[in-house]
Length: 243
Image 1 (cartoon, rainbow, N blue to C red):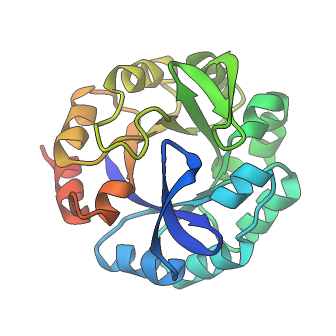
Image 2 (spheres, rainbow, N blue to C red):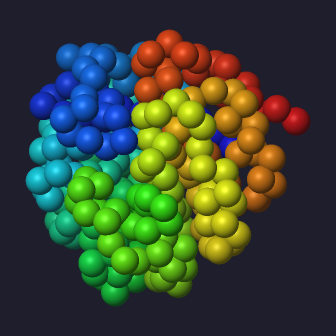
């Protein structure tokens, strides 16, 4: 299991939102590229990037900054936020992204996933954001009637091999992940690697995820707890590697 530090981009800065609310924002850095280098220097194996402005507007807004970050680092970088078209994905692939994360598009046009996987392979990743088990889209401002597990199964059937699952009620709250929901999702899609997101903020949370015993639980994304100094990347990575 690996730990992925998160960089959320809004108005050109590195921020964190509380439960995804655009109005509840904390700015942590005016230089996202420098922040990305810092995580790499601290030993990060991979990096998670989200274009928040892109997620809310429906089209990428930080393409230049993201390209600079990817160029600066030698570790894999995954990117999400506002990816709606094949061309937007292709541009990310051109600058060296490891995983392009689709959210709203995956729900609204799940039939397009198979052609994307055929074209881009394992770059195509789906982010499933859910609250009380139901999928949220468009920057978490809309909750659908689609169950997260049902969407995950359709995504797996389409050939996608990585799913990032976020429990939006726990995101940014520092209270720990939704272990039950994560276990159910991992069990539902045995052919996919699952990356946990939302509330993972202490070494004991990482241990709790590992205790699920799911062989396909690939990693966990950590954001606010690192920026607030509640834990360190080294401590989280050590917990991920125990045993």
